[in-house]
Length: 79
Length: 335
Image 1 (tube, rainbow over the protein chains, first blue to last red):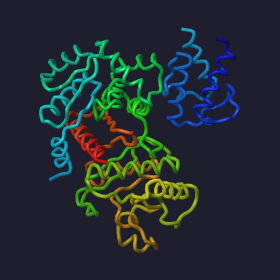
Image 2: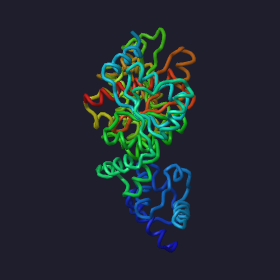
Image 3: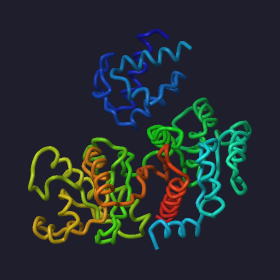
Image 4: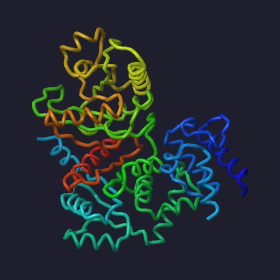
């Protein structure tokens, strides 16, 4: 899966998890998306189910931007 | 009879099933043995059975009456995985479920979600945050609740409140800067926890530096919004504010400052701090200068009972926390 395709896939999942239509870019912050843990749990479950990549909520809580999450998922997918 | 003695009697009268996932910890295994020997709980320990047995032997305690769930038992793992993935609340596909079924904490939560146990207890070897996230992922939040939080009960020598020396408080441990919805959730959950533990009706005050508009600004507005949300979500509960501490607890101050009918002002038995700064400082003030003992803090807001302990908890504290969890689980079944 290419980087752009991976980004679009995760952005689509995030919009579903966060129930938002805001444009998501690599610079979008998790403060903008919302830091509610139940939404983060939903997002990590979707990523795991769709991409077989396990990223924990604790990891996301320490990330600033959406781009960091995409990079982290890319590491898992490459393994 | 003290509140804890009363709760031990109640726990023993209808022993609840508790899953532990840190059976290799010396303190935890002693607590499990004591809970079992005294008939306070029906204990299940999830993990590496061989290492758990070795730990018990090293600590000189018996595991008689304790069920061990060995994560090396592939047949049992698969059976649980199949049952769990059939639950509507399951968030993962087959692979994700099987990834988790062999992890002690997540397996314990799965057993609780499946009603094989009533309570999951841990936290002596892992951070509270991990217990909370694990519980949220697998057990989920209670209806009408937006956040996990905590509540505790002070036993304050010389305090003559509406419930003697006892005073409930929340949240002093989990939710740093609650939104109005979250503060309402803390109050609602604290009322339920208080009632489960004491069998007394909660009168819950949302605290502020302002009483009924004597102050203004965003901090006051947040508390007032939380009150409205809490009253709307649970009109059966007595939740009111915003009140200063003395207006919440002292009838003569309430009579002077609260110029309306209130079922809470001046007679609150549960107080809700507006944020974690206040909660942390407030608890330490009461303990240091009021020489109070504090039960808890206990996690609340899950769909079922999840409890953690501090990493430095001695056996007696773990036993007490489990007893309180058991009483809460009994109340949840009665609800």
